[in-house]
Image (cartoon, rainbow, N blue to C red; front, top):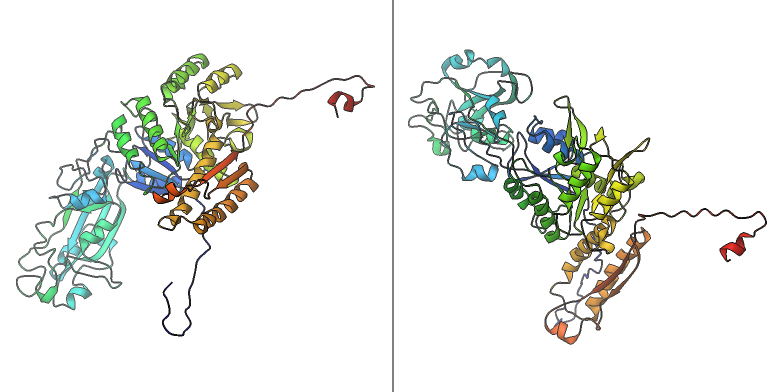
Length: 567
């Protein structure tokens, strides 16, 4: 507080309203192969429809990846998706495929063809681009195959006219020539009317009307280079000097329609373990990427199942604010006997890292692929991660996602292996949560163990996720103690912020008791002199019921219950 030199009134505002904030617990994270969409970039989707719009509908090569990602969206509405690189190339107007992964990659690329498919893959080979320039007496437009799709011929834009230029406009149409994208050959994907060749051109609403900017903004094309027939394209209208003579974009040019079918787009959509790992690398930074539930297709095609699983477990363990969901390879359980399937799953689980930040399930699931009208086997990881997201919605993160109340799997036709009690015992001891089908009860997640081998409170999903919520929320609030003084006022402020939060969690059945110690006993002179601040937070977590014992006792008619019970 500054000292006042002369009499006066000084108004100060002090904010003592700091609280522990709510934190996200239901955001999924997935990396896999798709037919369309940006590569090696995190994209958030909120529904299966949005997933299909951005990343394309699946074919036989990408169906397992797509359906696994879509299975999470049956329960939650926030999934961060990374399309992994799998040897794909973007189709190009010049017939030379080029890899342009995403917008950042595009900005660094040197391109020579006029147009490129927006994203890598063979879908780009279905795209046709046709450009109609302005011409004298509209002769070019009148003979153009797509003239009926526009209200009138291109000419001079308002922007160019006001600056003494002329004939700068173009019409551009993007067609699904082969029907690979929409399923209907000849469908119009995009229509850009009255765009300009002038680099500084603006539309009436103030946005750019320069045709490369307009094309880049749609979901189908990247602009590469100006066609030779657009000799003055890219010049500005500044000082009325867009062309050598009178500012006419047709000066010295014979106008003609420019039509290109994009070709040379490729994909293999069989990612290796290394390619999947590179995709999940984007989720490693807990400070910049908020994600809570990671899952993948086990054993990327041609890759190592255990490598993919352990990479995911390593990311979750290093972040300490999310859980990785692991499924055994589909071939380990699909079309196998119970005995063989259980043995395969146990052998797979035995190779996985012991960590409380992982959850392992037991079987492949048969689901309906509506895009191709077939049934397919997929891993269950997307469903088990989704059950946790659903638990957050209907209860809290510290409730178990297993059992008949919250553990019902949705949209599953059949499970590959339905373990009996002896099989479930074997799997549970191996840190694997059985998925079972009970007559009249549906398909249920029937276990809530984490992948931790050491017996402790953290070998249960609800306890691990409880501590993730507590640690993440309190750590976020604790940031505001940085650079304050380590004195009793700051310590009291911290206690007064944390204790109401923990009382709320206790009232919502997450913990049975707690204690917060933040005083001179753990903030000694040595701690203060080394610029540290220490708070010890003791938690008694609520435990989920895994074992029920019911004792039925028959007694003689004349016996008093109080005598037997001892009351």
